[in-house]
Amino acid sequence: METVGAQYLGNGRCRFSVWAPEKQHMTLHVVHPQERKLEMQQDASGYFSATVDDAAPGTRYFFNPDGEGDFPDPTSFSQPEGVHGPSEIVDNSSFPWTDASWKNLPLQEMVLYELHVGTFTPEGTFEAIVPRLRELQETGINTLEIMPVAQFPGSRNWGYDGVFPYAVQHSYGGPKGLKKLVNACHEQGLAVVLDVVYNHLGPEGNYLGKFGPYFTDKYKTPWGAAINYDGAYSDGVRSYFSGNPEYWLRHFHIDGLRLDAIHTIFDQSATSIWELLSHRIAQATKETGRPFYLIAESDLNSPRVVQPAETGGYGFDAQWLDDFHHALYVLLDQRGQQLYEDFGQIAQLIKAYTDGFVHSGEYVKFRKKTFGASSAHLSGDRFIAFTQNHDQVGNRVNGERMSVLVDFERLKLSAAALLLAPYIPMLFMGEEYGEDNPFLYFVSHSDEKLIKAVQQGRKEEFADYRWDGEPPNPQDAQTFERSKLQWQKREKGWHQLLLKWHQHLIRLRKEMPALQCFDKGSVQAEALGQQGFILSRQSTEQGQQLLCLFNLSEQEVKYEWPNPERTFKLVLNSKAAQWMQQKNEAVATPALTPTGNGIHLPPLCMMMFECG
Image (cartoon, rainbow, N blue to C red; front, side):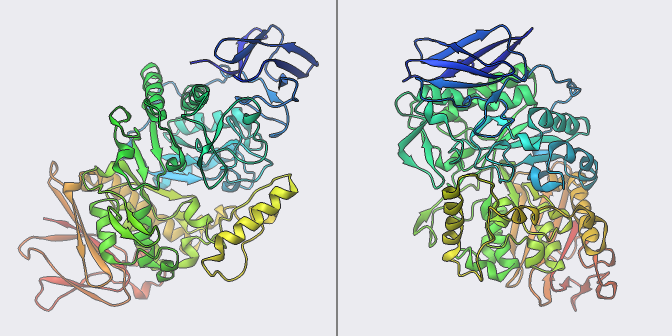
């Protein structure tokens, strides 16, 4: 594979390389610290290169293809002047890492925490996250999942408008800032997963097309031109994107990637991009001695996503389980059925627990076709489950989090339903203490036409849902400011109580063998009344069985023990005084049924029993 970009060789020497197979000439234009222009040499594969003896880190430059103008390096590692400015040489080997003993966490042990760098702290930088790591760790969180940091226009963006997949957002702290964060995470025992986008590039500052056929009209995505993974000249494109995971692994010590919307990555090559990517990662992990995980966001409901790439699968270690969110959310907030018309039955939530995909071949009204395939045979550690994420919150018209949609008791039920599930859990930043600031959609483009297009696009996106009012202006800086966490709320009132509830659930998850078992054969679930369910978790090796009873309704539910001769020890009770805002509403001991063979479960309550 050709190495592209500005590869610093040490002693002031740098090798510049850029892929431009249809261009005849390429000029390297150094603009800082001393301006000069150099003609680059082309090889048979369409790569232009030049080695310069006096180009130290910090040197800024453009490439000029066929005299068409100065453009940033497609493989830029740093854009200190923004997406339209010159690229900057970075010495990727100079950072003083102290994580030599770090070997990554087993995927099965991860408790993920999705965060947006710009809104996680008032400062909105990588380094500002570091002082918060200990509190996250004390909560039980052991893995950060960072929303995309590839350089995007301006300083406010979700990250999915990135246009330089190898450059770290300068306003966040650039490459050095990200390395400091990863190093600090590893020192404190936290892994780092990075969100990346390989299905499109953003509209502003997207100069890749100036160099080569990176994009194609053969396929479409909802956000822009599709990436050319299988057309003419696609070898260079495939090399460019398949090398990106290795870049994050080797130079930033990242522990895994979450790939955005893989269903809009199209490739009909004999050797798929997934196989190529898997091969390069396997080689890199063999050399580094650390596992590296790939997590997919997929709208396919297909088990092939987590099957080996060599056998026709996609090669991912795990994938997001949207169906779990939809099935649970609609039962906790009935207004949610306006958004998820195909959900709302308790049987669907039960299927989410036992099978994974709720839609596994049934007709789905939203899609107007049969959809999905069964995932019942897949182990639970092949899925990332959640009750909130950036999409589910941020794609509401007013960015409402669950904390403002449902009451405190339902928030507790939501947390328990997730953290007692046989899946790898993920929390969205602030969820652990019930953050009630919104998470809105925000941008900071410089093109007026593009700004108006984004504003109009958001209005049209929400038109079909009959929302009250219009979405906040994404370009307005206040939209971004309103989305920042209020970290101090963790220490007060019901926020602190909810934080302790999450902390306790995560501790149980880590201590109880039955909650660490991902084998679908050890998971059973059935309905309890009209809006309740029974979840059974067990570990045959340790002989532990847990019975989790959930009442999502506002009426008391009667439950008869499956075997009255067995003992049932109460382990967790969401209505116990220590978890109640109003202590006088606590239910310390479950009320027995008249025969003594069961209990009456209070409204909006969950209880967990260990079976003896």
